[in-house]
Length: 191
Image (cartoon, rainbow, N blue to C red; front, side, top):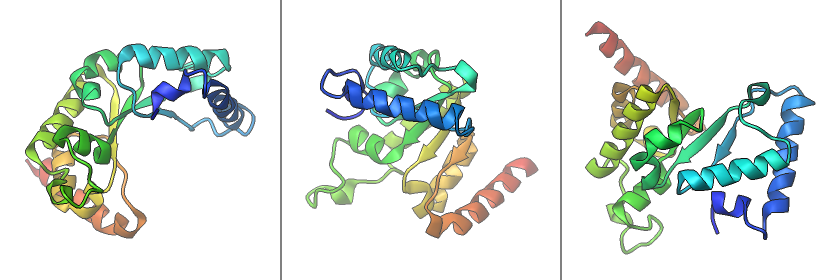
């Protein structure tokens, strides 16, 4: 039971309620109103709406006091149904590690197939490009977290060229990636 499905399950709902109350406290009492809710591994729009119902039960509501909700786009259905998901969220955060595994049908931790794992694979890049385009059309933010942009400047270049809004990188590669992105953006502006 991974991701969104546990939030509305009888076995975990009360624990998720505590998470909701903690987020509400951080945002409303501690004043950290830039905290965004991120829903992971959400397979269907119906599942997203079920999570929202539970959040509502515990006093946490999208849009209330400016609270935004992002969907981790890590399941192929998130990209295939991106237009529908976009109606109910404020942004996507591409989870490139899980998305790559699910698009390519492999476990990156398995020695048998780990050599095939590559977020720069054409199928993965097509999925990511489609999501970015759909998010832009729908007026929804889109970013990425995962190791790819940190490890591969050409992957970061691809993301910038596609128009991604934000890229999360590891601390050890921050300067290298920022420099690469700056060069890419300068080239795009020159055109």
